[in-house]
Length: 178
Image (cartoon, rainbow, N blue to C red):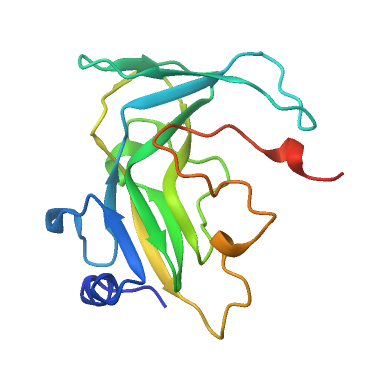
């Protein structure tokens, strides 16, 4: 079951959902709008290796915006820091963003109970498009969980994305054993 706007507000009051900064105007009927942070990153190498630590270069989005190009994966970040301690958060792109040909995540739209961080975005575009820091980029949807969670994400030793960051975070696939 997806939380309604009233339920999201109740959970914020209870402290099970945190959004910083929080703006009541960003609360939709059953979602919360998040915005593009001021940092983007791209991988330094053309060929990425799933078993290697692939380095990224991080840069600011200038005030006049930045044109994104097809065939490049951009890592972005939400301007909002979130904590979701009792629900499963899903990040989806806004339809207005999709209609510009911008995808904000390749596969990682679902968070875990206990995810506490800004969201790294896996941005790709179908044609050149200018983007701006602070623009609405996606929406968080919260699902109720059936049953008790044994180990929330923020309590797992194996969690790779627990370090709080205002910048995009590269893939940590290389930390997996395979």
